[in-house]
Length: 174
Image 1 (cartoon, one colour):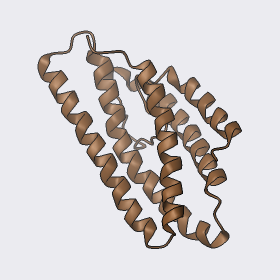
Image 2: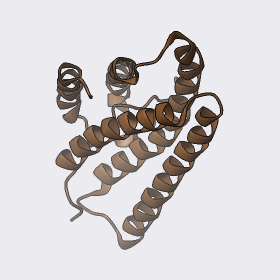
Image 3: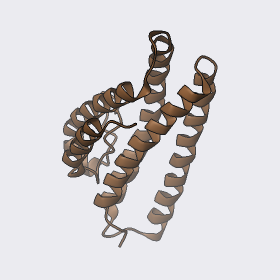
């Protein structure tokens, strides 16, 4: 079962990040030298990176507490987890850019900009699914199907928390 105290801690971290939710997705990691946000929000990039690191560690702690891995399983799982999160972070950088592009143009968005943002959103969702499918296959080679399913169940719950926070803080298009 998803530990309530850890879920509350993760939720509290997301509430703190919610102030920036229009600009960033907290489970993501940006490239060290270039902001992934729209240029209008580049000054927020250092704060966003710091919050992402903290939320990323919280996510790892929650996964660790809920996976119930043996030492043998853990030795196989954690390198795959790190690789998976790196791949998801690359997808997430696109989402951060999408959100900040929306925020930069939300009050005066053209039809072409709206169409472009919508197309990018669906492309990001497809890439996210492709990453998940790739890692289900990789993890299934070295872990039981139940363990793999458990991880992706936990991962989906954590994604849902992030998505709910973003949905609550991103205004509708004008």
